[in-house]
Image (cartoon, rainbow, N blue to C red; front, top):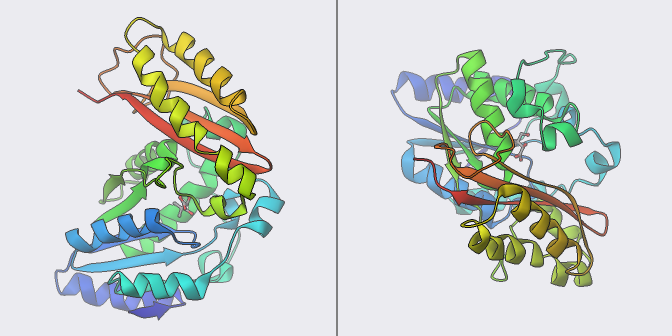
Length: 283
Ligand code: PAF
Protein backbone atom coordinates (compact mmCIF):
# COMPACT_ATOMS: atom_id res chain seq x y z
CA UNK A 1 0.00 0.00 0.00
CA UNK A 2 1.16 3.48 -0.83
CA UNK A 3 0.39 6.46 1.40
CA UNK A 4 -0.38 9.60 -0.62
CA UNK A 5 -0.23 12.99 1.06
CA UNK A 6 -0.91 15.37 -1.81
CA UNK A 7 -3.64 15.89 -4.38
CA UNK A 8 -0.93 15.83 -7.09
CA UNK A 9 0.22 12.31 -6.10
CA UNK A 10 -3.40 11.17 -5.92
CA UNK A 11 -4.28 12.57 -9.34
CA UNK A 12 -1.37 10.78 -10.99
CA UNK A 13 -2.36 7.32 -9.66
CA UNK A 14 -6.02 7.95 -10.46
CA UNK A 15 -5.15 9.05 -14.03
CA UNK A 16 -3.14 5.84 -14.59
CA UNK A 17 -5.93 3.65 -13.17
CA UNK A 18 -8.57 5.31 -15.34
CA UNK A 19 -6.38 5.06 -18.45
CA UNK A 20 -5.93 1.36 -17.75
CA UNK A 21 -9.73 0.96 -17.54
CA UNK A 22 -9.64 -0.04 -13.87
CA UNK A 23 -12.57 0.45 -11.51
CA UNK A 24 -11.87 2.55 -8.42
CA UNK A 25 -13.53 2.02 -5.03
CA UNK A 26 -13.34 4.95 -2.60
CA UNK A 27 -13.86 4.60 1.14
CA UNK A 28 -13.93 8.09 2.68
CA UNK A 29 -13.11 8.08 6.42
CA UNK A 30 -12.06 10.41 9.19
CA UNK A 31 -9.61 7.82 10.55
CA UNK A 32 -9.72 6.22 14.03
CA UNK A 33 -10.54 3.13 12.00
CA UNK A 34 -12.39 0.16 13.47
CA UNK A 35 -14.03 -3.02 12.21
CA UNK A 36 -16.98 -0.99 10.86
CA UNK A 37 -14.69 0.90 8.49
CA UNK A 38 -12.89 -2.32 7.63
CA UNK A 39 -16.12 -3.92 6.48
CA UNK A 40 -16.50 -1.02 4.00
CA UNK A 41 -12.91 -1.53 2.87
CA UNK A 42 -13.44 -5.29 2.47
CA UNK A 43 -16.57 -4.72 0.38
CA UNK A 44 -14.72 -2.14 -1.75
CA UNK A 45 -11.82 -4.59 -2.14
CA UNK A 46 -14.13 -7.31 -3.41
CA UNK A 47 -15.88 -5.05 -5.93
CA UNK A 48 -13.09 -2.92 -7.49
CA UNK A 49 -9.68 -3.16 -9.17
CA UNK A 50 -8.22 -0.33 -7.08
CA UNK A 51 -9.19 0.72 -3.55
CA UNK A 52 -8.48 4.22 -2.24
CA UNK A 53 -9.23 5.07 1.40
CA UNK A 54 -9.10 8.68 2.50
CA UNK A 55 -8.22 9.52 6.09
CA UNK A 56 -9.11 13.13 6.72
CA UNK A 57 -10.74 14.77 9.73
CA UNK A 58 -12.81 17.32 7.85
CA UNK A 59 -12.99 20.59 9.83
CA UNK A 60 -15.92 22.02 7.84
CA UNK A 61 -18.36 19.38 9.10
CA UNK A 62 -17.75 20.07 12.80
CA UNK A 63 -19.98 22.74 14.25
CA UNK A 64 -18.47 22.22 17.69
CA UNK A 65 -14.74 23.11 18.03
CA UNK A 66 -14.30 20.79 21.05
CA UNK A 67 -15.68 17.88 19.04
CA UNK A 68 -13.11 18.64 16.33
CA UNK A 69 -10.19 18.99 18.74
CA UNK A 70 -11.07 15.81 20.68
CA UNK A 71 -11.71 13.71 17.57
CA UNK A 72 -9.35 10.70 17.86
CA UNK A 73 -6.37 10.75 15.47
CA UNK A 74 -4.52 7.46 14.98
CA UNK A 75 -2.85 7.74 11.58
CA UNK A 76 -0.15 5.09 12.02
CA UNK A 77 -2.55 2.45 13.32
CA UNK A 78 -5.03 3.40 10.57
CA UNK A 79 -2.44 2.92 7.81
CA UNK A 80 -1.37 -0.44 9.28
CA UNK A 81 -4.98 -1.66 9.25
CA UNK A 82 -5.59 -0.42 5.71
CA UNK A 83 -2.48 -2.23 4.51
CA UNK A 84 -3.61 -5.45 6.22
CA UNK A 85 -6.94 -5.21 4.39
CA UNK A 86 -5.38 -4.86 0.96
CA UNK A 87 -5.99 -1.17 0.28
CA UNK A 88 -3.92 0.12 -2.65
CA UNK A 89 -3.73 3.79 -1.67
CA UNK A 90 -4.30 5.58 1.62
CA UNK A 91 -4.91 9.25 0.91
CA UNK A 92 -3.94 11.23 4.04
CA UNK A 93 -4.04 14.91 3.09
CA UNK A 94 -3.50 17.97 5.24
CA UNK A 95 -6.27 20.54 5.66
CA UNK A 96 -4.36 22.84 3.24
CA UNK A 97 -4.34 20.13 0.53
CA UNK A 98 -8.11 19.78 0.64
CA UNK A 99 -8.88 23.43 1.33
CA UNK A 100 -6.11 25.57 -0.25
CA UNK A 101 -8.68 28.32 0.15
CA UNK A 102 -11.86 28.38 2.25
CA UNK A 103 -14.71 26.40 0.69
CA UNK A 104 -17.64 28.81 0.52
CA UNK A 105 -19.95 26.53 -1.46
CA UNK A 106 -23.46 26.16 -0.08
CA UNK A 107 -25.19 23.03 -1.38
CA UNK A 108 -28.92 22.97 -1.98
CA UNK A 109 -29.39 19.73 -0.07
CA UNK A 110 -33.10 20.30 0.50
CA UNK A 111 -35.43 18.65 2.98
CA UNK A 112 -33.32 15.51 3.41
CA UNK A 113 -30.65 17.56 5.21
CA UNK A 114 -32.97 19.85 7.15
CA UNK A 115 -34.18 17.35 9.77
CA UNK A 116 -32.54 15.28 12.56
CA UNK A 117 -28.73 15.68 12.28
CA UNK A 118 -29.26 18.63 9.96
CA UNK A 119 -31.43 20.40 12.51
CA UNK A 120 -29.20 19.54 15.49
CA UNK A 121 -25.87 20.31 13.81
CA UNK A 122 -26.31 23.35 11.54
CA UNK A 123 -23.79 23.34 8.69
CA UNK A 124 -22.74 19.75 9.33
CA UNK A 125 -24.16 18.26 6.15
CA UNK A 126 -22.96 21.17 4.03
CA UNK A 127 -19.45 20.41 5.33
CA UNK A 128 -19.89 16.70 4.52
CA UNK A 129 -21.07 17.64 1.00
CA UNK A 130 -18.05 19.93 0.58
CA UNK A 131 -15.46 17.31 1.46
CA UNK A 132 -17.16 14.35 -0.24
CA UNK A 133 -17.65 16.33 -3.46
CA UNK A 134 -13.96 17.29 -3.39
CA UNK A 135 -12.95 13.67 -2.82
CA UNK A 136 -15.22 12.51 -5.67
CA UNK A 137 -13.71 15.12 -8.01
CA UNK A 138 -10.16 14.07 -7.03
CA UNK A 139 -10.58 10.28 -6.96
CA UNK A 140 -13.28 9.93 -9.66
CA UNK A 141 -14.45 6.67 -8.05
CA UNK A 142 -16.58 4.05 -9.77
CA UNK A 143 -18.15 3.27 -6.38
CA UNK A 144 -18.01 4.95 -2.97
CA UNK A 145 -18.75 3.19 0.32
CA UNK A 146 -20.57 4.58 3.37
CA UNK A 147 -21.79 2.94 6.58
CA UNK A 148 -25.49 2.82 7.42
CA UNK A 149 -24.81 3.91 11.00
CA UNK A 150 -24.89 7.42 9.50
CA UNK A 151 -28.12 6.61 7.70
CA UNK A 152 -29.13 10.21 6.99
CA UNK A 153 -25.62 11.04 5.73
CA UNK A 154 -26.06 8.49 2.94
CA UNK A 155 -29.35 10.12 1.88
CA UNK A 156 -27.64 13.53 1.88
CA UNK A 157 -24.69 12.23 -0.16
CA UNK A 158 -27.08 10.72 -2.71
CA UNK A 159 -28.70 14.15 -3.00
CA UNK A 160 -25.30 15.86 -3.43
CA UNK A 161 -24.38 13.33 -6.16
CA UNK A 162 -27.65 14.09 -7.93
CA UNK A 163 -27.21 17.87 -7.87
CA UNK A 164 -23.49 17.79 -8.75
CA UNK A 165 -23.98 15.11 -11.45
CA UNK A 166 -21.23 12.73 -10.27
CA UNK A 167 -21.13 9.40 -12.07
CA UNK A 168 -20.57 7.22 -9.00
CA UNK A 169 -22.43 4.34 -7.41
CA UNK A 170 -23.10 4.95 -3.71
CA UNK A 171 -22.85 1.66 -1.81
CA UNK A 172 -24.51 1.58 1.62
CA UNK A 173 -22.99 -1.00 3.99
CA UNK A 174 -24.72 -2.48 7.07
CA UNK A 175 -23.89 -1.34 10.63
CA UNK A 176 -21.22 -3.38 12.43
CA UNK A 177 -21.90 -4.02 16.11
CA UNK A 178 -20.09 -5.17 19.22
CA UNK A 179 -21.26 -8.53 20.53
CA UNK A 180 -23.60 -6.71 22.96
CA UNK A 181 -25.19 -4.71 20.12
CA UNK A 182 -23.41 -1.34 20.52
CA UNK A 183 -22.87 0.13 17.04
CA UNK A 184 -19.15 0.46 16.29
CA UNK A 185 -18.05 4.10 16.33
CA UNK A 186 -14.79 6.01 16.65
CA UNK A 187 -16.44 7.78 19.60
CA UNK A 188 -16.87 4.56 21.64
CA UNK A 189 -13.28 4.82 22.93
CA UNK A 190 -14.35 7.95 24.82
CA UNK A 191 -17.00 6.07 26.84
CA UNK A 192 -16.22 5.49 30.53
CA UNK A 193 -16.34 1.82 31.62
CA UNK A 194 -19.76 2.54 33.15
CA UNK A 195 -20.95 4.27 29.96
CA UNK A 196 -19.67 1.38 27.87
CA UNK A 197 -21.79 -1.00 29.96
CA UNK A 198 -24.88 1.23 29.62
CA UNK A 199 -24.67 2.13 25.91
CA UNK A 200 -25.84 -1.27 24.48
CA UNK A 201 -29.32 -0.46 25.84
CA UNK A 202 -29.76 1.84 22.82
CA UNK A 203 -29.75 -1.03 20.32
CA UNK A 204 -31.65 -3.31 22.73
CA UNK A 205 -34.53 -0.83 23.06
CA UNK A 206 -34.62 -0.20 19.30
CA UNK A 207 -34.77 -3.95 18.62
CA UNK A 208 -37.51 -4.45 21.24
CA UNK A 209 -39.56 -1.67 19.65
CA UNK A 210 -39.90 -3.69 16.41
CA UNK A 211 -42.65 -5.82 17.92
CA UNK A 212 -44.77 -2.70 18.43
CA UNK A 213 -45.01 -1.87 14.72
CA UNK A 214 -48.20 -3.85 14.07
CA UNK A 215 -50.88 -2.12 16.11
CA UNK A 216 -49.03 1.09 17.04
CA UNK A 217 -48.42 4.38 15.25
CA UNK A 218 -44.89 5.75 14.71
CA UNK A 219 -45.71 8.46 17.28
CA UNK A 220 -46.51 5.78 19.89
CA UNK A 221 -43.37 3.78 19.09
CA UNK A 222 -41.33 6.98 19.26
CA UNK A 223 -42.62 7.80 22.75
CA UNK A 224 -41.99 4.24 23.94
CA UNK A 225 -38.39 4.21 22.64
CA UNK A 226 -37.48 7.57 24.19
CA UNK A 227 -38.98 6.58 27.54
CA UNK A 228 -37.15 3.25 27.60
CA UNK A 229 -33.77 4.66 26.57
CA UNK A 230 -34.04 7.51 29.05
CA UNK A 231 -34.86 5.18 31.94
CA UNK A 232 -32.28 2.50 31.02
CA UNK A 233 -29.58 4.24 33.09
CA UNK A 234 -26.90 6.73 32.08
CA UNK A 235 -28.48 7.58 28.71
CA UNK A 236 -30.32 10.65 27.49
CA UNK A 237 -32.03 10.78 24.12
CA UNK A 238 -31.35 13.91 22.10
CA UNK A 239 -33.86 12.96 19.40
CA UNK A 240 -35.63 9.91 18.10
CA UNK A 241 -37.35 10.26 14.76
CA UNK A 242 -39.22 7.70 12.71
CA UNK A 243 -38.81 8.69 9.08
CA UNK A 244 -39.14 7.70 5.44
CA UNK A 245 -35.91 5.84 4.64
CA UNK A 246 -35.30 7.82 1.43
CA UNK A 247 -36.60 11.34 2.09
CA UNK A 248 -35.82 11.30 5.84
CA UNK A 249 -39.11 13.10 6.53
CA UNK A 250 -41.08 12.01 9.62
CA UNK A 251 -43.88 9.53 8.88
CA UNK A 252 -47.30 9.11 10.45
CA UNK A 253 -47.77 5.47 9.40
CA UNK A 254 -45.72 2.52 8.21
CA UNK A 255 -46.79 2.47 4.55
CA UNK A 256 -43.86 4.20 2.78
CA UNK A 257 -42.56 2.11 -0.13
CA UNK A 258 -39.09 3.60 0.57
CA UNK A 259 -39.00 1.80 3.92
CA UNK A 260 -39.28 3.32 7.40
CA UNK A 261 -36.27 3.96 9.62
CA UNK A 262 -35.94 5.03 13.24
CA UNK A 263 -32.92 7.29 13.85
CA UNK A 264 -31.66 8.11 17.33
CA UNK A 265 -28.95 10.15 18.97
CA UNK A 266 -28.24 9.59 22.61
CA UNK A 267 -25.85 11.17 25.10
CA UNK A 268 -23.94 8.76 27.29
CA UNK A 269 -22.12 11.19 29.57
CA UNK A 270 -20.62 13.68 27.12
CA UNK A 271 -20.33 11.14 24.29
CA UNK A 272 -22.93 11.55 21.57
CA UNK A 273 -23.91 8.18 20.10
CA UNK A 274 -25.96 7.56 16.99
CA UNK A 275 -27.87 4.47 15.88
CA UNK A 276 -30.86 3.44 13.79
CA UNK A 277 -33.22 0.62 12.97
CA UNK A 278 -35.01 -0.22 9.73
CA UNK A 279 -38.63 -1.03 10.68
CA UNK A 280 -39.86 -1.74 7.15
CA UNK A 281 -37.84 -2.53 4.03
CA UNK A 282 -38.06 -0.57 0.76
CA UNK A 283 -40.55 -2.23 -1.63
O1 PAF B 1 -18.77 9.48 7.89
C1 PAF B 1 -17.66 10.06 7.98
O2 PAF B 1 -16.70 9.53 8.55
C2 PAF B 1 -17.50 11.44 7.36
O3 PAF B 1 -18.67 12.19 7.49
C3 PAF B 1 -17.02 11.40 5.90
C4 PAF B 1 -18.07 10.76 5.00
C5 PAF B 1 -15.73 10.62 5.80
C6 PAF B 1 -16.79 12.82 5.39
O4 PAF B 1 -15.82 13.47 6.14
